[in-house]
Image (tube, rainbow, N blue to C red; front, side, top):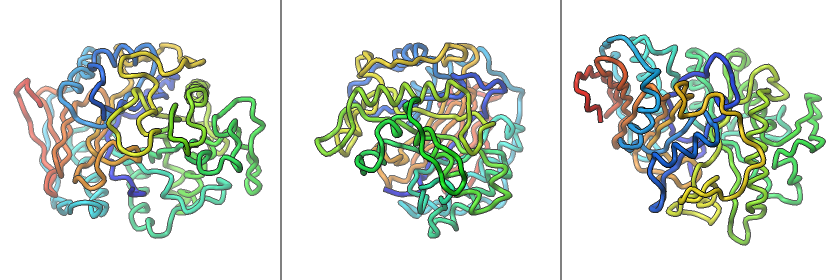
Length: 402
């Protein structure tokens, strides 16, 4: 499993008013042969009250279903752009894609600047916590030295463009690996837990999720203090499995319900972390459905809040108020991606795909060794693509964008 995830992301910045549902999103994985149609998923999302959705594939029908929900509030003026010059080098196959990740990000950002959309759409990429050499206590965290040649330029890009640093953070993995050394209530984000102090910073951490986020903040600071002041950390994935193999400690419906309910409560409070208390924590929960075709241990197929038939896997004790749900005219955001391995078996590690993410104002399409951002609500429609090392902008007048 690659520690630096090759996930190219485009997303709409947070809404000016950080309402609970605008801060909380959910991952909508579709690695299953028994999942309901997207229309049913939209109804479930409305019931949850989440304002953002992250997709792992670029199925045209799915993207159109989400786009229809946002079309009433989306508009833009006619625009055009020429490709930047010179183009980045062609992405090599497999894990060697890593050196081409930043050039692809820069390529797409440059075109967004030419289109006048760089303030509405941010370009970023997701990482798992394996990029950290150490994470405890949070104040001692720093990035793995072998990854610094890749991470330092990416951090510079984030600081320069105002895009967030995304991390997949799973307290479950820490607990499952060391149930004797990690308190379950701390990993489950239970509000009654007394917290764990960081002896160096003097801060007390009420739960492991915010400790993991602050560990990333400290790692960024250890790398570049100037950049650290400008870069926000957001959680692109977090969750807890409801079922697992006999050796997967803690994977139960009760624990999953407690964890995911506490994530919703934590985000709903609109607070930050102990290190960054003034910035509200932004999180994508994993995942909407159990996915029966995912490889790996049993837990990988049991992260969903819902069974494929639409019934809850367990009852959540906490629900967000419906102030900005995905079915409203103020849709928070849709994230779309294809094939990039995310630590949960959603795609092959070396299949040559980037994953991509965008708001509800942007429809998305991907093909092998390429990234394509389609903006169907711009007139004429604008298609930005990265393919075989070059960045292109196509102005398309046809209604059929996919």
